[in-house]
Length: 471
Image 1 (tube, helix red, strand yellow):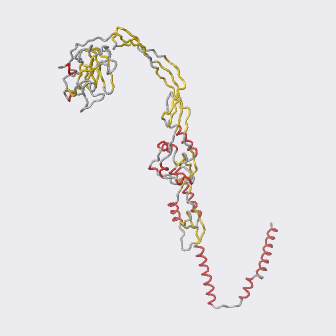
Image 2 (tube, one colour):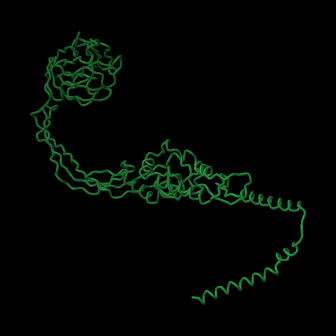
Image 3 (spheres, one colour):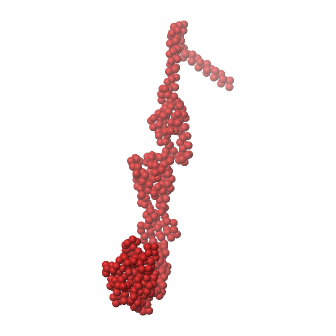
């Protein structure tokens, strides 16, 4: 150890010898020897001092006027001494916003720092941070949903696009025990394109599906403002950005239903009934069958239905109806009574085939909906129905004559019924073609039996003036 110490001391002495030898031969030593013993004027000393002080001040001012200049999109927005402080501020701001939105964000603008000479400026880190806070635009990497090459709305990821397609496919699926979904397809092409947007503009899949099905974007959302997916999207008009392409979801379902099988009607004939009478000898019974259909729907609306299979569950039972063959008896007295209760008012007379009866209106306006129609004579109801322009009508057979009652509101008798003279058979109405203040009236006809005793068609029996029976 002692030898090591001695060696170090010897090494230092050798180095000092070398330094002294180098100093004796240096330019500084020569200047020192030249100045030795010489004296200078005080003004020279003053000039040298001023030169040194001015140089020092100039160097200080030069060095103090250098800053880190903060640039945003090529514009100077601040000056700082410590670049790391600004970088840490930007990193902290993006981290806070990323946590707030639940997605990674980054500045849209290019922010850079450059060491540069800026005389007359002052470093102010607080002002630079505030300028960044006011002017920075944070955006996130997203995926723009595109339908038939038309940009729609941004979502967080490609998986959200798949979710949108799945939700649209199931938007019109019917939930029923007898329905099985076979397949669904969307006619339009739906895909995703990378884009950068403000975090507030990123939508959830359910929101996009709701707006696609509605066909428009709510006015409160505003337009997609920052889309960088492709330059082709930048020229879209306001209308195309707000109105979305129509979505057509086509589904094919297998539907199993139980359907009724109608029964047939078989007729037998009997002389125990009049020709205008009939009765059911055996009631019919509907059958049933299980039918399988493949139903095609577009946006929930059925556009096609094909029967795939059919299985009979229960066969129908035919209904047996007995129809009469006996001639309808002549039950009239031949003396007609006025067919409107309370008299009424005659509003139009008989004019042959152009007006083959008379029109009788109600006598009391307050009772216009309750004016009753009476059978002009005893007889058998051979026909009832509803047909334009007659409206609801009744035809009664009296033997030598038929009487007809038109435009009725309500009927109280049916085909095959026997009626007595003066019996209430209907209420006055305005069914069919009627004119006047309210159209409520009875069109009453008397037609002469052509000898057959059967009412087949309207022009079969000759009309006569009904008033001739009341004079």
